[in-house]
Image 1 (cartoon, rainbow, N blue to C red):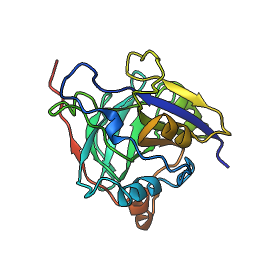
Image 2 (image 1 turned 90 degrees about the vertical axis):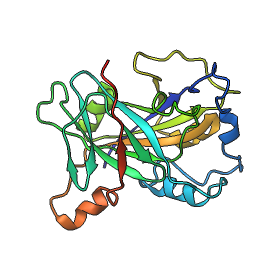
Image 3 (image 1 turned 30 degrees about the vertical axis):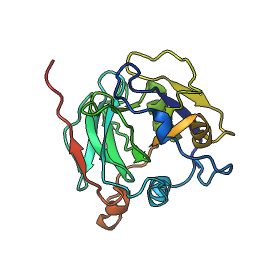
Image 4 (image 1 turned 90 degrees about the horizontal axis):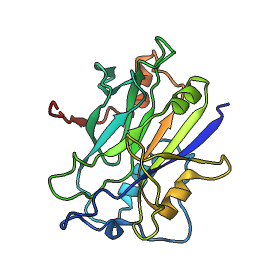
Length: 235
């Protein structure tokens, strides 16, 4: 049985100095007093259910910019029809809200040849100023502790949320974005994130590998959802 290691990641408000920036409070969910979701639900259940029950109607297809980053040498690649391309150390792509994506982590330090296949569940989107969506992507930062725990057979869960500006915790960001906060195993990270703001994505990192049987691959890759490459200009 996998041992769970729960992590909470804060996503700070994108911009506070731009006049046309949307107020994140406008997009916070309405509190019902009872949570319908828990962090241990299967990948895809929360995103698809929230899309179906969205209070913002109609739901328009949207590719949310997401940036993947990890320790030096680690490379990320998204699945495309069951195969992975050459990885990037600082991958950014547009992922569709309501979908679950399988990606590959390779080039792991001190673990030559080892690979991980986490999932990122896109629960909701952010609302940056017009034209700045790729400037403020959702950050997916893997640290060495995450990778080591997964290689040891444990399940690591990170809930990524946009803070409520009225109750945001004043924490300094790290060099690669927001810093993760550990959550005890007896607490539900999704519930804590929903109390502090609006959940936008759920990252799950385990030791699961791609199946060899073709009949199982569609399920492993969650139906092969489409994604949009985002090409970054050379510095």
